[in-house]
Image (tube, rainbow, N blue to C red; front, side, top):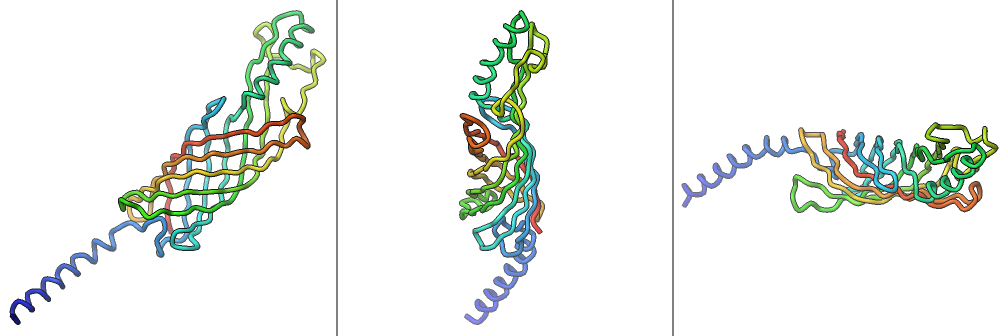
Amino acid sequence: MKRCAYIAIWSLTAVVCAGVPRAQAQPPTPGSQASQLSAEITAGPTLGHESSSFVAGEVGWRVRPKLEVFVEGGHMANVATSSLEANANVIAPVIGQVGGGAGSVSSIGIKVNHIGAGVKYWIDPIDPRFHPYFLFGIGAAFATTEVNFALNGNVVDPANYGVQLGGDLSGTNTKTMISFGGGIAIPFASRYFFDLGYRFGGILSKTSDIENDTAIKSQRIILGVGARF
């Protein structure tokens, strides 16, 4: 019996000693005690009436095992809406009538630079290789509207035809942006991780500056890479 006890003790010691290096080699999880600060770069497509792309940067700080606060800033190349296109199509025939030709909308676009802050809630993973989360954020969006018109296929300045564009078709406005979504972090190489997710951003209307303004609905497919410190 004593011999069996010695064998068991030595076997347990060997398992523990062998397990220590492996445990140290495991990458820290997104909500681990050892990794409070994180930084990542994200990019990917934007979906909507006009599909385009975005790029952004994010810094996070773990305040509780499953709760992280973050700040984000980025640029969306074009989140133009159907309302913008409809408003532009009202102006195009006017340019055609004044210019004596066929007026048309050459291009529409709403470029957005945005900053904001929010919280991420980390869910207990079923598989240790994948760490899911939900998030909510709020911030400011600096939206620049750009619409180009053409006469007989050539881009023209509406002002040359007596058309003064309103705030719904030109200019920059600061608006409130609310974001929510989720994703999955995939740790690799000790402190690094991939981030795959989705974020919906509602850029609220601002009728105080733009008559009959409508909200902008942006959708981002998140493809990111980051590190934890």
